[in-house]
Amino acid sequence: MALTDDDVREILRIIDESALDELSIETDGFSLHVLKRSAGGQARSGADRVSSAPERASPPAEPAPRFAEEPAGDDHAVTIPSPMLGTFYRAEAPGGSPLVEIGSRVEPDTTVCIIEVMKMMNSVPAGVSGVVAQICSENGQLVEYGEPLFLVTAG
Amino acid sequence: MRRVFIPNRGEIAVRIVRACRALDLECVVGASEADLDGMAARTADRVVCIGPGPAGESYLRVDTVVQAALGTDCDAIHPGYGFLAESPRLAARAREHGLAFVGPPTEAISLAGDKLAARAQAARAGAPVLAGGEVSGRGEARRRADEIGYPVLVKAVGGGGGRGIKRVHDEAELDAVLGLARREAGAAFGDDRVYLEKLIEPARHVEVQIAADDHGAVVHLGERDCSVQRRFQKVVEEAPPPHLPGPTSATLRAAAVAFARQIGYRNLGTVEFVIDADGGEPHFLEVNCRIQVEHPVTEAVTGLDLVAMQLQIAAGNALGIAQDEVSFDGHAIECRLNAEDPSRGYAPSPGTLSLFAVPHRTGLRVDTHCQAGTTVPPYYDSLLGKLIAHAAGRDEAIEILIDALEEVDVEGVETNRTLLISALGHPDFRTGAVTTDWLERALR
Picture (cartoon, rainbow over the protein chains, first blue to last red):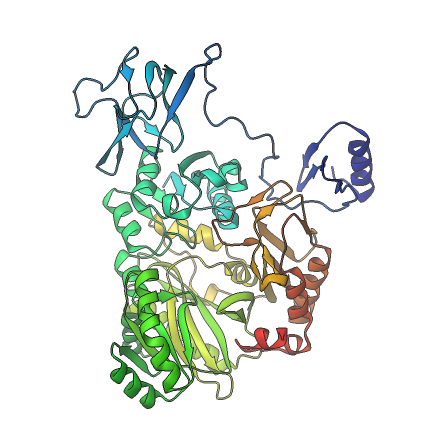
């Protein structure tokens, strides 16, 4: 199916009159992405051309949350995000006991884990005071920059 | 080769994802926090966040990139262009850990990064090299500049790609910039050596695309003309170069292939030459060890997929194409649409695109990572996309590009769109070959 210019105008008219702010349509070899500017008085809806995207580009969507949401119900829980991409280790040495467990009390300078980047071992401080409520990553797994490592109940 | 790690962003990351798809390879994009919802990240099989926005804390971290590739079970790294694409350290690190590095051997990258060593090897391979050489003190610089004859260029040994170059017209200017050039070179490239080189002006910038596999095959894929430049940065590129005499073309191609053989080059690369616009004499400039921004013009006229070719060579496969099977069809021109503000001297213009519309038409290819909603972060280059026209003849290709640019509609950032239209429509450009100083003169 191919969309004609008239089709696009019709789509734009419908969006203009609707409460939608954003719309993506993709058919064979054709993609249309419309973003309605709701504030600032500069709304523009007269574009009758298509936006360019490679054929395989997935339609833009609200970016999905990168990492699992924090469990609800505890207003005082904060995450300790990974300061770098690397391998997550709970102990300082292989076979050693974990630096922290669930229930451990941490202070901002308490080392909570090690992140290895190409044989360089980086100690990660908690950065907050509180009690470890959850361990979000598995020992020996790759963690990304910003990925939650621990959940700490502040206090 | 099964899964490729792409520590890059923008249109080239999208381009590499597409080549991986064509070869049925999986791909993982390593993106900074600023690019996590970019088009490359969204089209890849997986994305990992390698660090915060500033490139020094993400895309330029060798160890993080290798760790991310290993941690996501990739068996190859395609670095794209820019960032770590020509880092011998990344190539070596990757290979130490059993990853295929999609690029030339580490030694070739080191050699190419040392402009003086590259000049020496080019001369050994029989390529014409410009008069010049390394200088340290003022006295030595003055003597050498007198030998060469003004004007001369003061260039950083570790520079390249148009960076680390100063133009000097007389001894007083030379005295004034020498110390500064060395300090800047040290800060920018970690190597404060500089050399002088004869400035050829007016000149054309013509480069030869080469491809070499692990089995001894080396071919050239023709030339590209990149003479339309602003501040040593390419703005418009085309293939074939207009009005390039056959014998000159043959000289360039032979020199490029001989140089590649001489240094044991593998994978794709570009040998750059400067051609004296008056005398027609070509001179070796430098070699680039990466896929280049302007590779689509070569793809258009040869019908080859250069990025797929890079991946296949890195996987150890034979080139699969002999020199006499490389054919050239028609004329292709590329222009770079940048987020730049013409009213502020073409300074980068970051922002969020509320509209990004480019036409689709026969003979036009658009390589971009942009669409409405895309953010152009302040941390990286300002390239929004490339428009590439391919037609039977040059005039027709120019028409396609101008028509397309007239319809390009970008809101949210300033662009160089009107500059591109004026350059392509200018009688000088339409007539044929322009020189590297032309655009800046024409702008005035």
